[in-house]
Image: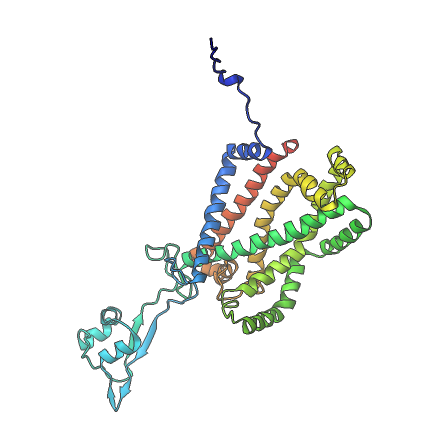
Length: 388
């Protein structure tokens, strides 16, 4: 006689333990403000990443942010002593007759409707395109246009690309590679290594951050461009300067050089509190090497503080790039940047007459930096309960 085992109730079945990562993620997602901030950051940085397709020749449906949409005029030429016909004029300049009739009402009133066989006096000026400078928000230009008729929405999207590239690479290189690496090493090894790293960091921190950034960028600017021209000539990659890669690399270098010291000091302080822990001593007892102790044991212990500082650093780097560009030593035209948009907005009179020129970059930067700051606070509350 066989005995059938009765199914165990759900409460009696062994439950799989949840990893700390999943617990932390679940706790963060319970905070509405954190979820909103994550969505905002993904949308803004995603828009910037989308414009990267333009660098590979993909049509992304946005106007070229570097092309001016100002009024263009051309004159009727004289060929063999006689003025050219509008057929020859339109073929030479690749313009439609309907466009000429729409943009030249005074000529139409005087000579009648313009056709292919119309002959106008030599040196008669015809308007080929309308002036779209300083137009307010409309269905054609959602965020209006600037003084050169460039679409502000397109420029904002491409400026997000600049912010994305510079902030992410700067934080990864300066905060993760230099700051975290040197901070872990100084805090764990101590002694002579700690003294060297921290004294160099003290020198860096003793200098005013913004002033140091300005000096570095100003000193290396011309030489940096010469280096990239040499790279273009040697490799045949003639698009590096045109796409603003030289500006990106220079600002990443400058911000990383300035920002690593503060991050290293911060992480070193956390490591000093952890390196005498039992699990660290146990790892050393079984012969674990320094890289393994740093990566496998110490880094997970300071991970909450790393995430908080990482999110805050993204906003700081984005703001530093805007300030440098506004001062004229950051991103250089024609590469779009929020700093250039702020600079082009002009003074008080322009702000009153054309408020969208300043409102567009200001709102984007405000939303982005506010999202990073609020997200950092939310993560700190979740991962560091002692700070609540």
